Image 1: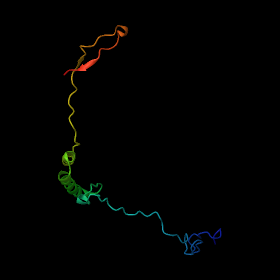
Image 2: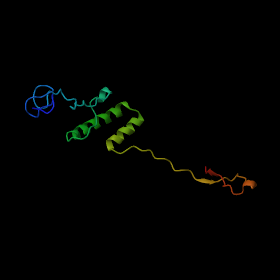
Image 3: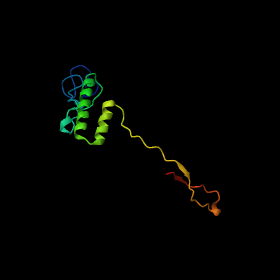
Image 4: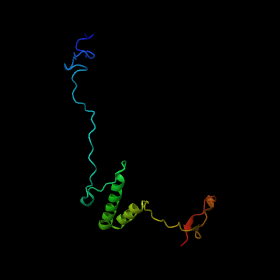
Length: 127
């Protein structure tokens, strides 16, 4: 006999909660992983072209998706989209080259203020 009424009974077949023995009748567990559906793009032309990683079979899918997305960007995009497509093809982030800073010289028209003798001389761009 169990020490407590309604206790599980520890293998004697007298489960207190469900009458089925052992620990009693348990309902289904909510701790079951639900299988995630893969991502689907909202753009119809590249609906199933997604870049996934983590499994060996994703390598071939990556190359196919990269090619399809790049072709879509070149077909439908503007000049910025083409830059992104080139970056996706080469796997190098697109950058822009900034022009060098113009040379700066002391302002020839500056008249020093006698009340503020230690003030720096303003600089202007040569040009």
